[in-house]
Picture 1 (tube, rainbow over the protein chains, first blue to last red):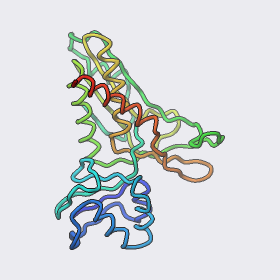
Picture 2 (picture 1 turned 180 degrees about the vertical axis):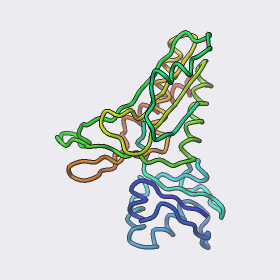
Picture 3 (picture 1 turned 60 degrees about the vertical axis):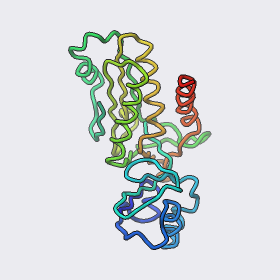
Picture 4 (picture 1 turned 120 degrees about the vertical axis):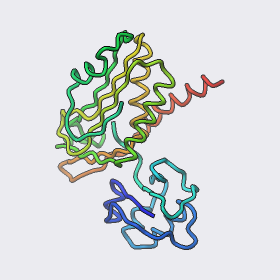
Length: 83
Length: 160
């Protein structure tokens, strides 16, 4: 699966894009966040306040209980501030 | 019609191109968002030098198409346009253009108002401001959420 990070999530994780194989036991966006948090201090910092992190699967907003599968494009970003 | 681009736009030329030949249009309403030089923090006298707009290519276009479709479903528009810029922008620069045209002015006013409110809470853009104290990500404002939510409420009313 492809994972994208934007704004301060990109800065804290140190990457804007990465490809991973869906880890065992990860079936939802929330479980993916928990798995990512354990990858290192940058990831832990990026996801320390899950309430201010928005998620999209295949470019649609989703809640953290949304399912994920291999082949999905999953994105994490802060609340949007355009306009 | 929607466009996401780095380059500036000419408001007059955009409106002329959008409305050309469409003689059912009785009124055109436009909104232009500009970069301010004001303090990002309330009560601070910090000025911003410039800002950089980051976005999510692909999802941005998808979200803008969806909100434009929603506006056209709610109001009888003859034409509509959203242009949003990304990249580094100096104070005074144009960021966003929303244009709505309809037979009667009220539909154009309401649809334009809806589009900018909705866009601010749905389109995946993020502003990074350059200040004397370093770069700061602009935080989402509750007032923007409230502005967008009132359109949700009016839709619920209409459905009843």
